[in-house]
Image (cartoon, rainbow, N blue to C red):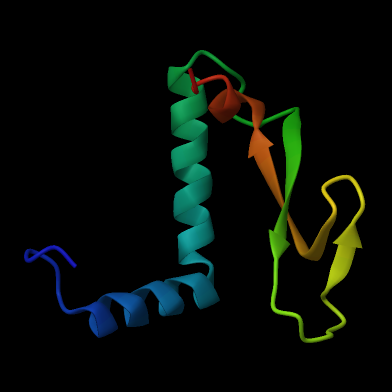
Length: 91
């Protein structure tokens, strides 16, 4: 943690509290709308990009473990949904 912030447990406690009561989501929504407005876009996203990634896991059998035939990998698949505005910011 940077030296100008409280210790990690205090910061994490505040984050968890804000996440539980919805403060974190409200802050993220407000910031997203501000950034999109500054970019000259509609504050609410209309489209998104969905991507996935296969991750190798331990050889122990589990419900969350599967096979990705395209990449020939046993493991998990994780997904991410990205706003098209943030995707266009990457070079």
